[in-house]
Length: 225
Image (tube, rainbow, N blue to C red):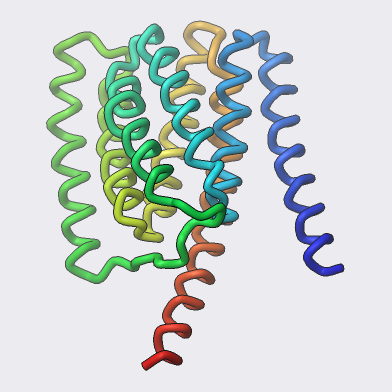
């Protein structure tokens, strides 16, 4: 009974977030493919948060679609990240996750890992800003920062670190700003701004869920020793 209630709540949550994204996209007169891509993003992250392998498959589809959309919006860093970093990682994680449920073998960053992640991200953001400004990116400062954060996120995702949700949260908040600016300039991107707001909430949920799974894994290891 409790499991059925949990599944029903999860389905309602998926439907709610998807409906909000669609509604805002339609009201904002966004392009249909922006709305579809946004819905796929919300669903794939919810699936990952719940430990479902299908999340990686949908994540790959989202990465490919988002890369194309970002490229034509002249957000080159965002396009490159989704095409050459997120998409391959999703494919890799999909092939590695042989079971329907994502492995409970979740890792946790130590102090050294945090220092390396933050410093690498900060240095990359500075360098990318100047590179993107040189090639004519629409928003070089924000696009460079979000690419740097996203690269750290995908590296942590590759090795199944639960802190990926924290960096993904930072990235989603930056994306809210990017697409809000894009919407104010061109009238397009509202669905993505709303989607990334929903993604921010999902990231918090994912972090909590993965932390619980991490604790379960630690407890199981301690019992076998």
